[in-house]
Amino acid sequence: MRPRLLALIGLFLAVSMGLGLLKPPADPGPILRPAQAAPAERTMELGLHVKNIYNLSLQDKTFAAEGWFWLTWPPSIQSLMERNNIPLTELVELVNQVEGWDQRLEMDTQQPVRQADGRYLQLYRFSAKFFDDQQSLQTFPYEQLELPITIETRPPQFSMADGAVVLDPKQPTSEILGESVDLNGYNLNGVKVSESVHIYNSRFGNANHTQAGEYSQVSYNVIYRTNIWSAFYRFVLPWLAVMVILLLAPNLEGNLNELRLAIPSTALLTLVFLQQGAHGNLPPLDYLTYLDKLYLFGYVAATVEFWLFVWGSNLISRCEMEQQGPAMARINGVDNVYQLAVISGATCLMVLGLLRA
Image (cartoon, rainbow, N blue to C red; front, top):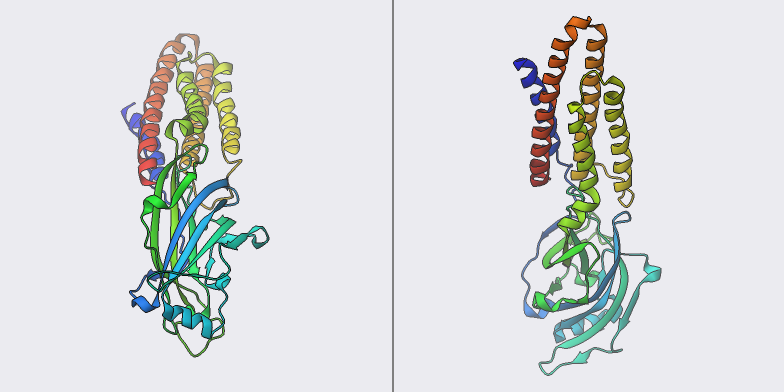
């Protein structure tokens, strides 16, 4: 019995560790390099205040946001704009904004406001739908979402090829988020601001400059985490209930063949439908989420249990009357091994899978 005990426990531990350590392929994402320092005459200060975030769609990888952003620049950049007839609406662009027909971008004033220090200030009000290209759901339903609002310089004259204009987000992070940025089912964890240079794989027709496709970029990532208890009750608890039924099924006597055989097959179908329901609001994924790993482990547990019950049923039916006692003891011993193996594997997966996801 000991070799079989070790083999069965080893099977479930191998499955759980394999699923727990499995990670999705790396997503290359946009090509970015660290932001470079620029003199004050080539620096445009950027500020943002997000009033509202709503209409989050994990399936479409989109969300909507509205608020204000503003730009402050020195007279040297103002002269550059006037020489090249650059409109105020085309100084920067919301890079990850989608569905332009639904976008609203309004200037607070028709001309920039000259401030006491000689710099120029222009305030914009925006309302748009944004695309979260780097969305990762590998820890679903305990995912962390970083919803980005990315602002980038737009005119070719602002590129790194010709006296780069660099965006500088000089603003306390406590002033970025407004009062209506909460999302149902998620806890707000603040905002992260990152500066970089976006390197496009095109020069956009400017063959004279190798850096014509490089632009200064600032990304405001609003960070959310799912509510732990809400996610547990909605997604993990149904899986856990089915697993408990699978664990209790071997406690039935080995001669209750029909009842024993019905439980793992019913549990397997239940797991399939539960997983499909959990994926109802998710996009098609090329990797396994944390919840997928739990369900795959459940499939293995239900299949192995069905196989053990078939083996036990055949063993009982082929035994003579006087041999059924030892056969029942043998079946009960294997059932105990199965229960120990499933508990060990499920515990390992629930901990390791979440830590390594």
